[in-house]
Structure formats: structure tokens, C-alpha cells
Image (cartoon, rainbow, N blue to C red; front, side):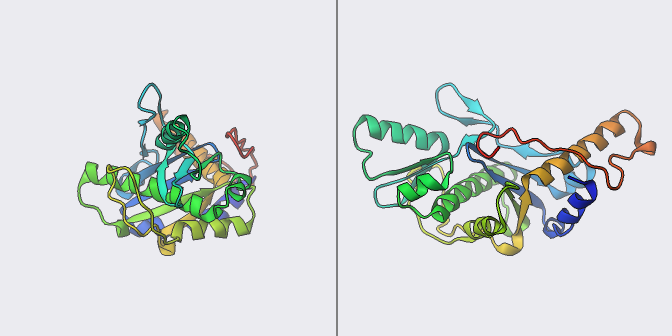
Length: 247
């Protein structure tokens, strides 16, 4: 992967410049999460990034990501996500009341076909849950915030073809209704992230740019700013993905 190719690929990502906040959602095969940055802070320190770091199973585990698990009830309505979905389905199974419910973990297309649920509905539910979770936490932190103040980034594994990128864009924009059984959230029945507020980012490109920013920051800390040059034009390097499902 060349540095010049990375910069060309990311050059169209201009939506964040007019927004107060940039929020990124990563729907992983095994775990999912979100992170965000305030634009004014980013301009001073690109590594000033925040994330929810207290996903918990309510017993022992506290993690920086939530399991990519979605549970729908027997009528096809969204019920829960992450650790809550795991606990709810385990409880239903113990009581032998799980029949007809749709439980998705490790987001693989085969499992969705087996349970006769459109994949776009499952991905949309996961995106919407994380989006709404973020909005709730953000409002708790800074008070009133408008959704139009936010530019969204959705990560896409590089192995996925262009049709899959379009699929993810449609999943983020999809409008559908659900019933949420957790009173913690006040869910807006519209799931959509407007297309003009959405950027799809290839995971290895995002990782590479972060490594460049990290290099620059470390160099500045060591007083090397005057002689700083992170990657020379045409430089090549390798990004290794040690994720739980796609590599």
C-alpha cells in the first residue's frame, strides 16, 4: 500500500470540515464500537479521540467494544444488541421461549439467510443502535446537540467489493420501525444517516492514516518537528488486520 494512494483515496472526505463532531461506527464481525472527535479539538490534536469504554455484561466484563450480536423478537422487531442481546437470548433459551426469535452473532451472511432475515435489516439495526447510544451519551456530556452537527464515518473492510460498500451505505440510510424493549433509550423510529453526512472509510486506509498521525505526534513530543517527514512520496508499507472475523 503506498502513501500517495492513501491520500488520493481519502481526499474526497470533506464532509467533516463543516461539522462540529465526527463520529465513526465500526461494525465488526465479532465486536463493534464507535469513537468520536470534536472538530475544534482535532485541529489542535488529531489524536484527541473519545470512545465508549464501559460496555458491560452487567456481571464481570467491561470492554471497549460490544459483541456484534443483534436479537429480534418472534415478530421481527429489534429487541437488543451486544451484551444485552446475549443475556436476553440465553434467558429465553433457559426458559425454552426462544423459538421464533432471531439471534445473530458474528455477522456472516450465511446465518442471516438461515434465519430468513434480510441482511440489510440486521446491519441497519446494529448501526442504529450504536448511533443512538452515541447520541444519548453525547447529549449527557455536552447537552443539546443537533444531528446535523455530526458527520458520520462507517468503516468497511477492504476485502469487500463495491457492491458491499453500496450495501453499507444503504444500511446506514435505511428507514424502518422497531420496538425497543430497553427504556434507557428514546429511539427515533427513523434509522437513517443522511448520505451527505456519511463517509465510508476502508479500514486499512484509516489505520494507515492514524499511524502517520501517531508518528507525527510522537516526533513533535521529541522536538523533531523541524525535520519531520513521516512517509516520503511513493513509500510503501504493510497494514496487518488481526481482527476476529475478516482476516
